[in-house]
Amino acid sequence: MLAITTAFCVAVLNSCAQPSPSSDAASSGATAAAAPSVVRIDFAYYNPVSLVLKAKGWLEEDLAKDNVKVEWVQSQGSNKALELLNSRSIDFGSTAGAAALLGKANGNPIKSVYIYSKPEWTALVTRADTGISKVEDLKGKKVAATKGTDPHIFLLRALDQVGLSEADIEVVQLQHADGRTALERGDVDAWAGLDPHMAKTELEQGSKLFFRNPDLNTYGFLNVREEFANAHPAYVERVLATYEKARQWAIENPAELESILAEAAGLEKNVAAKQLERTDLSNSVIGTIHKDTITAAGDVLKKSGVVPADTDINAVVDSLIDPQFIEKVAAG
Image (cartoon, rainbow, N blue to C red; front, side, top):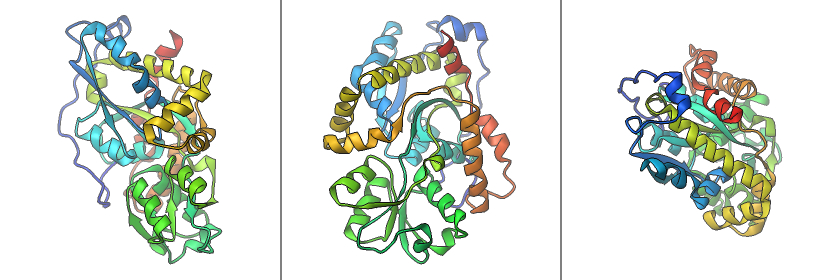
């Protein structure tokens, strides 16, 4: 994600990357000398697989064999996950694909290594009484959004499709939950929503999803700090192996998944079910389709001035996407 002018931009880490261990070390398992003392990993309500993994304790069970501790940290949105990664507060963080691209372009030293979902987790939302029914109706309106996240980028792409830009609206910078509250209170006219908050206001307040396009949602990316991946590649594989166990369990146990999400996020069952019906967990191997999706988003970010016009989006994407770890896990 690179040098941008928005308030959420965080400082670039100045640490030097460590040399990558040999492929033999990566594939044969971690030695005691290579083991980290702790693995810090996020959980997020927009990442149901992370909630399963946290609830089941499978990562703790595996890493305890090497006396490696696990610390869980909540991410409230992609922007917060990126801040946590950049500050070394976590080693693995959940973001949307376009947000990961934006972070990488801004110097956040991360690699995207896994797909935890293909969601339709964002849409443009309004109240039933606003008269807003299409993107063009947003001109001159107040729209809540969390900058640096997929909903914000979704908003920019939606505006671009109808010949508008962020300059044609008033963006009110709020975290996702606060954006929902602002919409319901009438403080803003529309909101670039995110599940489960979007599902909650849709079902409980009658809010309207007036613009939807699943193809503009840029997948759920699990990212790792480059420094951690270079120092502990075998542990990246082990984290992804337990993620795979959680993902498969989630697919096979939809009712239990709904209960875990509802309990963790404090949701009614029907709200959790609405979020999950818009969430596809069928593929976890990151690759070409994900590159193509975030490249398209990057082009709009350049056009909107969110990243500098001279940014080489293709080069950023190539540097970001790293499928080697999940490919080894899948092959095994």
